[in-house]
Image (cartoon, helix red, strand yellow):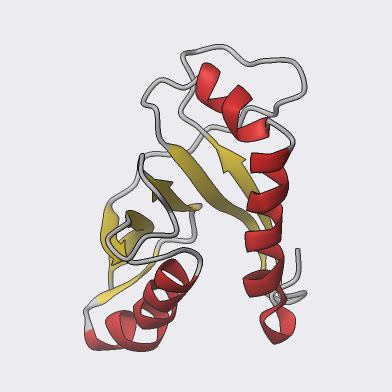
Length: 139
């Protein structure tokens, strides 16, 4: 998926809609270890401005036909909370992380996968809570 011209900001919400409508999210939750759906940004190609985005769960140690298993390496994580309706609330947090938080701290991106954690609840409500997890290292 391209990040050029904010295309990812349009495609990722559509991808979530498709996964909810076709039963993918329900199937993932059936093999979940923790019950939370994840958005995983992985396989960055900064020159081409491309990422792979996956809807995922922490599984119970086995996969289900049709799903891909990926191992997320251990990391030190900076965790940011988003409150409000999706996708705007989480997109605002992403923007603040890279435009405000990184420049103001002594940390840099550890070049690993980034996670979005979606908790139970109504993702369209004003008090819906989700998180963004960024792997970090001290500069």
